[in-house]
Length: 243
Image (tube, rainbow, N blue to C red; front, top):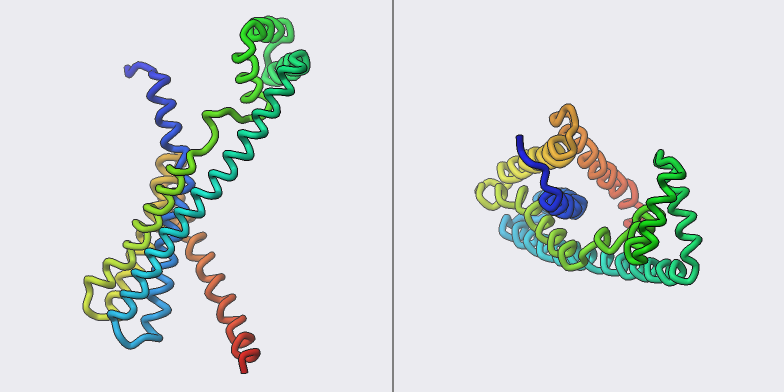
C-alpha cells in the first residue's frame, strides 16, 4: 500500500490548477486554425497562401492568448492580494471579530462549539496561523491559491500553439487541398474528443470518459457552428451597408 504523501499531493494539485488554461488554449487553437483553413480553402486559390495565413493566425493567436492570460491572471492576483492585505489589517485591528467568524465557520462544518472554541483559542496564540486559517475558511483565499501570471500566460500560449498544429499539420503534409482539409477536420474532431476524454473523463474521475469526450466534442463544435451561422446571418447586413 502506497504511503500518503501530502507534499506530493499538494504539488499535484498545483499542477492541475492550470487545467483551465490548457483546455481553453488547445480548444481555441484547434477550432480557430480549423476555421481559418476551412474558410480560406474555398476563397484562396493558392495552397501556400492558405498555409501562410494559417501560420500567421497561429502565431498571432498564441501571442494574444498568452498575453491575455498573463494580463488577466496578473490583474486578478493583484486585486485579490490587495483584498487579502486589507482583510489582514482589519483582522489585526479587531481580532475578536475574526475569532467569532472562524468559530461560526467551524460550527457550520460540524465541529462542536466547545471544540471549535479550543481550536480558535489555540490559533489565537499565533496570529499568523489565525489569519491564514481565517483567509481560507472565511474568504476561500490564500497566497497559495493565487495564480501565477507568467505560468498561466506561457501555458495558454503553448496550448494554443499545440492545438493549432492539430489541423494544420495534416493540411501541410497532404498535397491535395481537399484531402488536407478533410484530414484537418478529422484530426480536429479527434483532438477535441481526446481533450474531453482525458481532462473531463479520466482526470475528473467521470464514470464514462467516452461520454465526457463526446460531450466536449459536441459543445466545442456546437459553439463553432453557432459562430459560423451568426457570421452567415450578419454578412448580408455588412454587405448591404457597404453598398
